[in-house]
Image (cartoon, rainbow, N blue to C red):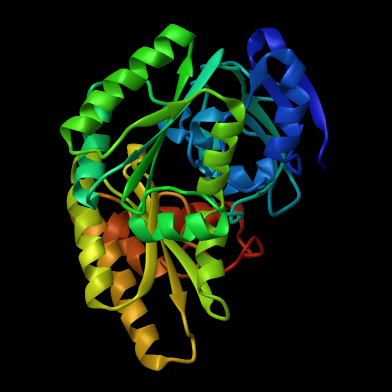
Length: 366
């Protein structure tokens, strides 16, 4: 279940078994000049990435799994095997019939078991430039993100880490970053193009009181930088040993991001929680990592109060209770608040039609 079945270099696509991991696929593609850019951080299986509609740091440029899957082979609850976009279809456009592919993507294993996946591939960038920009406060860092996105710069990654996350990374990854709210940025293209993009982003950051804007194209420096970003979860856990770590996320319209992030920081301080914020802010999506003593009843009450405030604020500003992590069990109670009753009833009808005996990941989503 982890074979790379077919690579069509001229068509920029491939077929893989659902157990193939993203790193395995990209290692296989190295000599083709192509790559698969969706990067949730972990070396996840492609099938799992489809089931959760994974995205991650490159989504601001390349989209989520939902935008990068051409076809799926799935096994339904009764054992029927289907191809969601046609028996062998892998065309970039396809409006034949219902969009069964995107019905399955993000369904968290409740509608079918994904066994094979047809993916879009992309040319490997000629030049990659990464930059680090520390700011005096959260508001100025996030405002820079909004302005960069509004200019239409084709940025590949733009990630936010608050000062506590930077502090944890400095300890865990032995880095020497300024311990203030920070943006990590990345640009792809030709040498001249990425320099122009970086300069334009730098001007915006400096207008928002950026303390400095350092960039590099050296592969070792870039790998170290993004290794630190991807290890933020482990860095956070390392500074709070013997406690349970929980991660939650929301996603809001870009223009609402400064408001929501600033309020989230206030809520964290008022509720006295051990928390850091990291985010794929170019999409309006951010995560908070919370360290808890689950035996402390009062601390758990504060955590639940915080989680509810975070989700309700996101929904209030026309966002979603989750941009990446999915519903699972923890956010079922917010589904009707976000969607209303009729859409949830429609989802239940789909579930009943495809899985009448409720054998596929029962009890999840709603």
